[in-house]
Length: 74
Image 1: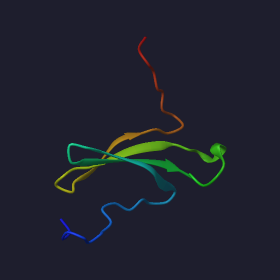
Image 2: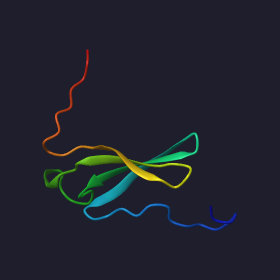
Image 3: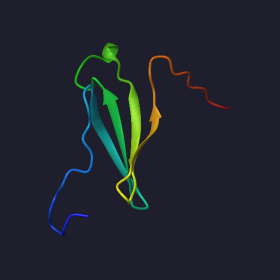
Image 4: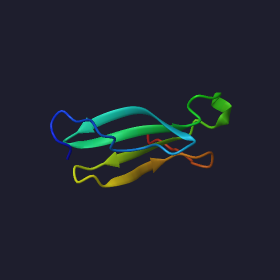
C-alpha cells in the first residue's frame, strides 16, 4: 500500500483496451475496459472486467469477444 497522500497506479491497460469505468466493493476494485474505445463501434467495443483484490492480485472476471454468446434467463 502506498503511504497516505501518495498516488500510484494499480493497473495499466494494454492496447487495444481502455479503462472506461471503475467500481469498488468491500475493498476490491473492478475495472471495466473496452477494446478500441476511441474508435468507431465497428472496430470491436468488446468489454472485459478485471478485479484488483485487496491483496493486489489482478484477475480477469469476464471477457466478451465477437464469438461470445450471451444468453439471459427469463
